[in-house]
Length: 106
Image (tube, rainbow, N blue to C red):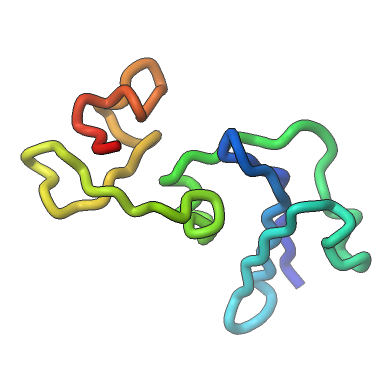
């Protein structure tokens, strides 16, 4: 069994990301409260405050639809027309704030 449990937030919604890559197909679950996580794996839950995940890391980890349900958003950069905005991973993000990117479409 290969379990990955993380406490994450998008700044508004917080919860527990649980990925089990030891089964086929791999499963990704998202729990709002620690008590909702199956008791058999609850000991994997990290202590402390949730870590911020932007839209791109949420996409990469397989839970973008849970943390950012109104995503994907199109990129407004002329060279990336038709592509999905990669938000916090974009080199045009200003001061690590992807919403300040001049090409971000709100």
